[in-house]
Image (cartoon, rainbow, N blue to C red; front, side, top):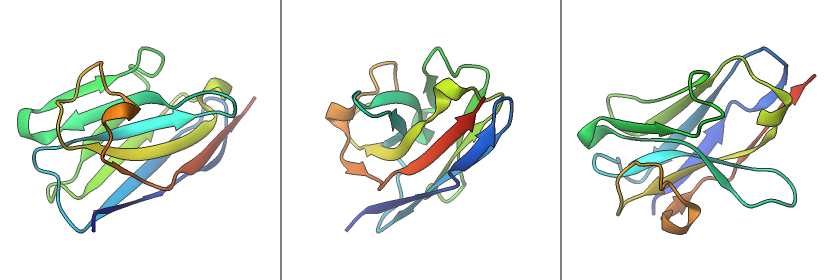
Length: 126
């Protein structure tokens, strides 16, 4: 059984940084798109960033472009999200996700996700 486990969330002041980790067990994701969504109460999950190692593609939503960086380890079983210059608008529960059937593009959507992590809370104080 494939499982994802996130860690690294917490409380940070505006302008600060956090790094999220997503560890995969049960498989490696050589061909899959891996990435992150986030969700605030009352709203649906929105794509934050994704990456696919097989074709070296990555995508970021406009509001995090230039501030967040997604990367994968050499073993293709750990995904990182480095978040810098954070703002209160980044406050959300962040979910790691895997889409095994589609590339990493601006169409990174919850509807195509095959495996979800349990989520980790990120809070940015003003």
